[in-house]
Length: 137
Image 1: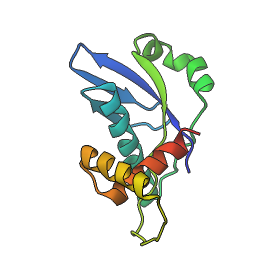
Image 2: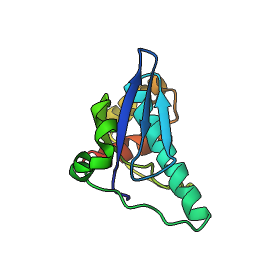
Image 3: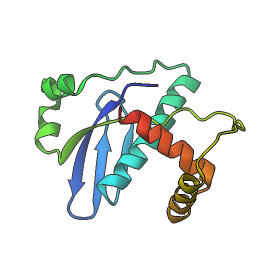
Image 4: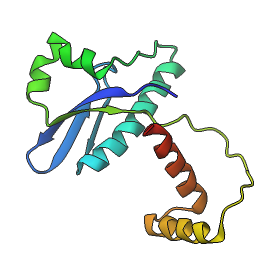
């Protein structure tokens, strides 16, 4: 799993949040809410890093939050920032693989309710929940 890249987030009035990644030139994301922005930013990072790899360009290395905060060339961007946050690129998607797991029936009911509420399949809900839990550790 790739290390998180630091995003500098600005807010354009009350309408939209926008972010750029100092370590990934040309990679930008925006969203109507901060949560939406973070979702789109993870997708944008994955797409940008994949494009770099596809064109045999070097994939940048993520600096630490402290390194970005101490970079004098980013002083103006930081001063105008709404927030500075780490964003982990989405995991690279591969071919779906069928698995067999055992789940307590009551837990499965809760999973199914949550998946329906989110408007996704059980499989997608389980995968996204597991990936999110893994990135929070």
